Image (cartoon, rainbow, N blue to C red):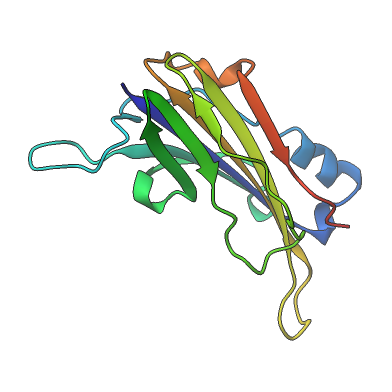
Length: 169
């Protein structure tokens, strides 16, 4: 059963916490249409098989919140995917561990049956060690489908939505 992964990362600084810049940031979609070639088996590639890929979208303040699409090997995406009893167990990793907000208790993994998909969102806040640079922020959105999908799957409403965003002031 195929697994499709889309990882959307939005990055910004304090300059986009209000006004027009914040409006542009808040208008960034949480799901995008899929390009060809990102539906994967969810298993490690073997001889003669394609390496499983994720569709990546990076959206950065310093690029005027213009989406830049790419692809990454699934092993480089911060999410655990495991098949258990005919279901797909999905649990994003919280990386890096030093990013705020604190997450004392995380929600449990989502278990998808074929034909379902989940949208999982996590946010982070960082400061420079010396206090030289502004605060910076990330919002990671993982859209993950189990089973065959169409290119517009992540433009709709997910079967599960896990909002793990915390206060970042």
